[in-house]
Length: 99
Image (cartoon, rainbow, N blue to C red; front, side, top):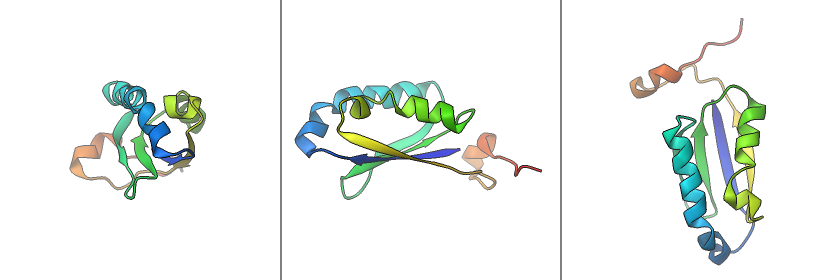
């Protein structure tokens, strides 16, 4: 499982100009099951996405397609973790530690 931490690198007027495209990108990946949750940081200086994927390289490649990143108004920090404990609603995403 992955935490994608998005940090804005531009003023909010530039962020807002690309928000519709970014939200459409997020929704597309919510619908395909790659993103489990997404939202703004508080204070509004970026966002967080909880994602699942085959491997880190695939998630990093996907993050590189974010319209915010392509417009040069944000950057990503990708953190991989092993979700060994989950709420019941996320049981299908529970992982085992490697042997």
